[in-house]
Length: 109
Length: 121
Image (tube, rainbow over all chains, first blue to last red; front, top):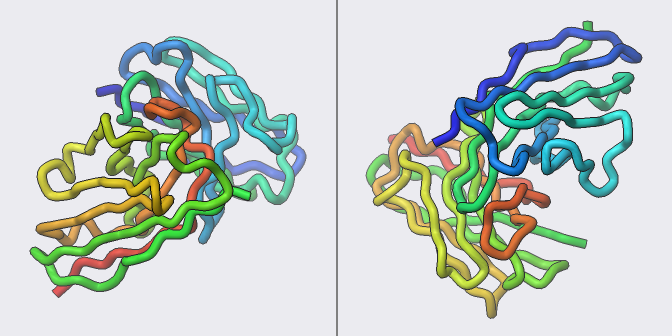
């Protein structure tokens, strides 16, 4: 089973700043089957990125994903007020089982 | 518009059972794998179980294996989770989620709003 770790646990930034979130896997994630989700308080998670770098439908281009193998990054180029939330990475692949990372909270500095 | 509406949550005593349902609409239900994901209060996301389009492939997290059973009724566009021998640590908001693929192994493109299960005496 692949274990995902995310860093930092909390990221304190101001609107307009750039956010860089990291997700590291305990073993290589095949075919970059890595997704990112955003979750705001009281809401269900929303898919942002899949395949490590492809934006889901309707996701603004300030969100970008990169990486391969065991190291992946979600970048928010310029934080908007609505971007302050918790972000989870997720590994998926050839079987039904999926794994989530523990999350990174992006809060207002 | 894709809609997933969970129901069946509530307060239940340890050791008892509960059955969750998820009513799906806005897409061809039997073209996609489906999942249950839970979130304990103040905690992160935990995958619980997944089922392929035709129920031919099913998976469970180790934490629920042998106690929970996932099923689907494609004629009724519905997903279910039978939860037996419930424990306090099963207390969580349970989400129904739609896979991007037919067999599973895809990201979870759509989520319901969740149904809360509280296990307590």
